[in-house]
Image 1 (cartoon, rainbow, N blue to C red):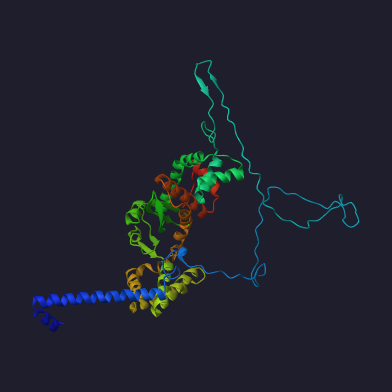
Image 2 (image 1 turned 45 degrees about the vertical axis):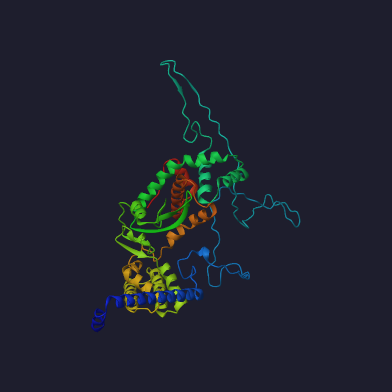
Length: 454
C-alpha cells in the first residue's frame, strides 16, 4: 500500500485524471454487470409473498384441486366437538297423541324424553314507528308556559332511533358498504326506507360520540406496557396517505395521516412510555418511545427464504431454522420447567450469536446479516417476556379489514370521513378483541357511555 501511494504521488496531473476516468468507466461497467446479474437472479428466483414482504394479493393463485370429501366427525383418537347449547328463551314440548301402529290413545300416558335439539331463529325484522306526543300548558300560578321533555333517544327533531343508527354505523364501517348498498339492505331486509342523505346525516351526527370513545381507547393504548404497530397505504382526497394502527391484545387505535414518517408515531404516542415496541424494521417505527423493541420474526423468516431460494444460502437456512425453533420454544414456556426453559433460551441465544459471527457470501444474506447485527438485542425479546409476541401478525391482522375497505371503496373523499372511519374501526376492533357484542358497544358509544378496559 505504501509503495503504491508513492507511485501515485509521482504521477503528473494529466496521468491522475486519465487514471480516474478509466476507474469511473470500470465502475460503471461493473455496476451494469451486477445489475444484469441481479435481474437474471430475480428472474430465476422471483420475490413472492412467501419469501419477501410483498403483499399476499400479488401472489399467483394456482388452480385448486378438488379434495375428496372426508369422513364427518372427529378423527381417530381425537375428542369430538359440536355446537354448545344455549339457554333457551322458549321450550316447546311435543308428545305422541296415539300409537301410529294400532291407534291406542296415549294422551293420558306418561312419556319419556326421546330427543332434544335447539333451533336459533330471528324475529321478523319489521320497523316499529314511535310517535312522541308532548303535552304542555301555562301555569295558572306563575303564568309561565312549560312543555314536557322527550326522553333520550326520542328528542325533538330525531327521525331515526338509536338502534337503527347503530345498525347503519355497523354496516357502513364494519363492512365496505356504500350508502347506496346500506340503503338497499335496510329496505330489503328491514323494510325501512331512508334516503342516502339521511344515512349521511346519521353517520355525521355520530362523529362527536365516536371521537370520544376512540380517544378513551387511545389513552389506554398509550398506557400499555407492550404495543404493536403497523401501517398500510390508503387514498385520501385523491392523494396517497397512510393508515396506522397501535394495538394490544385487547385494544386497537387507528389514525389516518398523509405521511408515513416518524413524526406521526411521535405525535400519536406523545406521553407514552411502553416497555416494549413490536413492529417491522421500518425506520419510522424505530423512532418509538419504548425502552426496547421486538422486530417481527415473520418478516425475517420470509426475507431469509428469498436468500435460500436465490442463493441456496446455508447461513440463511440455519438462521431461519433457529427463528422457527425460537418461536416454538416461546409457545412451550408454560409446559416446560422454569430451569429447563431458561437453559434452552440461553442455548438459543448462544446459537444466534454463533451464526452472526460468520459472514455470508451473497449480497442478499449480507444485507440481512447487517440488519441482525444492528438489531441483535431485538430478535429474541419474546423469549424473556411472556407478554411479548415473536411477530407483528396481530397488527397486520388488525389492518386486514382496512385493506379490503380500501380495495372496495377506493379510499376517502373527505378528511372528516377518514377520521370518522379510523375512530369507528378503533371501536369495532377493540370490541372484537374484548369479545363484546358490537351493537351493544355502539349503543353505549352513542349514549356517551363507552366502557373499554385495557
